[in-house]
Amino acid sequence: MTEPVFAAEPSRLLIAAVAGILLLLLLIIKFKIHPVLSLLISALFIGLGAGMPVPTLVSTVEKGAGETLQGIVLLIGLGSLFGGILEVSGGAQCVAQTLVNRFGEKKAGVALGITGLVVGTTVFFEAGVVILIPLAFGLAKRTKKSTLYYVIPLLAGLATGFAFIPPSAGSVLVANMLNVDLGIMIAVGVPVGILSLIFAGILWSKFIGNRINTGLPSNIQEVREAEEGNLPEFSTVLVIILVPLVLILCSTVSAYIPNIEFVRPALEFLGTPFVALIIAVLLAMYFLGKRQGYNGEQLKKILDRSLRPTGQILLVITGGGIIRWVLQDCGMGDIIGPVLEKSGLPLVLVAFLIAALIRASVGAAVVAMTMAAGIMASMPGVAELSPVYLAAMVCAINGGATAFSHVNDSGFWLVNSLLEIDEKTTLKSWTIMETIVGVTGLVCAILISLFA
Image (tube, rainbow, N blue to C red; front, side, top):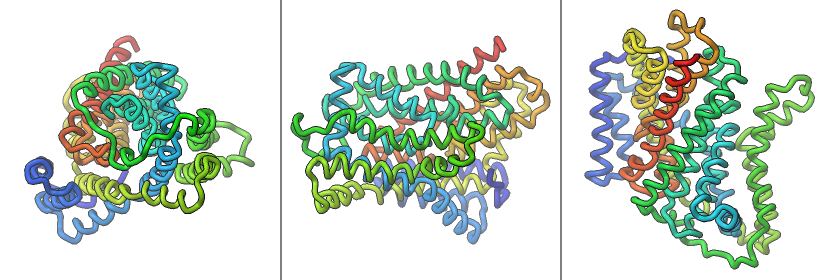
């Protein structure tokens, strides 16, 4: 975890943070200023308000932009290329039709949620979103329903898989910090993840999808549906979608398999998310492009059009990441943790509250997980707790680190930009979904801890 580079006076930092977030909402919702400008103005306001020296603030803004982009810029770009070919070739339409035909319109979202849950255990949230969201758009286009009806189960599945179920990076990170055996973590995390998906994905999507009708993004609306006879084979599309996921999974699993040193470097290279996506794009270009009758010039136009929205998406995500780094470099996390540590509340609840407050104030889920786990691991008596209790604590921490995603979280702006929905709708749909995931994790953790 990165140490604060400037120790702000606590009360001044809290006032600046609250005022900065309120200013951001006011600029976007009331004055209709573009989110990129609003985010940058708010980040500068928070930094100056907290008393951060100007050279340090400028350095933090530049660092925040770089740190935010370095993990996602290739994923977003390659994912857009992959999704563009999948959509124009009829691949997404083919998968959507197959899901509707096999599960029915009402259960297709459930299938998508389960897919997200499985995928979320192997890839980072952003990678799973860019690979799978074309399927949700395909279903919405096929059924003429709100995109939220299908996107929310997918997002909930990805979020719960990442938070609770190994070998996901989030669950493994916190489990290792608390010395929780991964076998026990899987036994505890799977039922927690399934319950979270049911409440946050399946039930919430039906509620919000029937009340807010969000249309397809403009680049999806422009694509005309292919004739059913011209659609690619379902098996071909499925294999191409699975290729990057399987490569990433093999890379993850290889770390736990002994005596494969001779192939592990190759698996780690091929399973690097951006390398796996390059392979997927090339396969899609051939099997869904060339084999479907598209020539090189046509494919280039498809790829060019698919990249049109990525500039704005990346800038908005960067703005959210800059706010997160300004808050983090001012020491926001170090203010919250010690206060709750001395509160005398049950340990599982303390773990959730520390993670949730860091998440709400700083924005980054992994930062909240890391800081909360570090604080809890340092508390007296935690090491002597039973393995099942510690696994429940992992669920509480990661639930808190998932809940309350809002304007300082780059994931909030990723969803906002990909779905082309306004900030109010993002708060009503995405933020509440993430909070349901987190609260479900807390409730399950409390119940498990009572019997641990």
